[in-house]
Image (tube, rainbow, N blue to C red; front, side, top):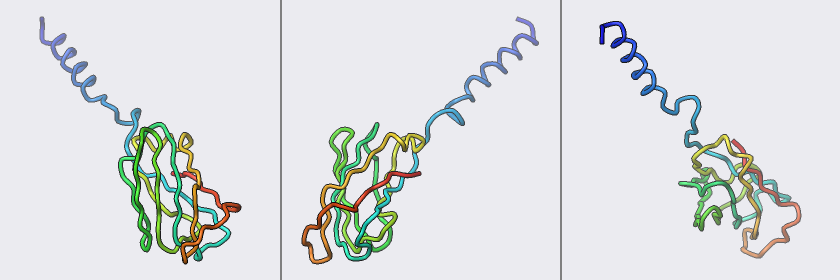
Length: 129
């Protein structure tokens, strides 16, 4: 093989090896769980589930809240405690945040600050980037 074809072959191989998943593949990132509540600042705990294409790899909560979670396949159950605001109550690390629309969060139970259960009317969760 002459020098020119070898250089061309080397350039093609280098280009193929550098293609990886940059720009076209998925990257792990955070999604936010947003709470709409009729009792902002008066709730002390919420239990909810998140269903999506994959279980979250990790979860965190804003300052003043604590989050606990357990996954069973693609369903993850979360408990968040503390004075619950309207807005972000948890963040979850997922394989591909571009698939946020495939995740659904459903309120299971809400407790007031004194731990009495509240009716679920008016409580909704949204999964957002």
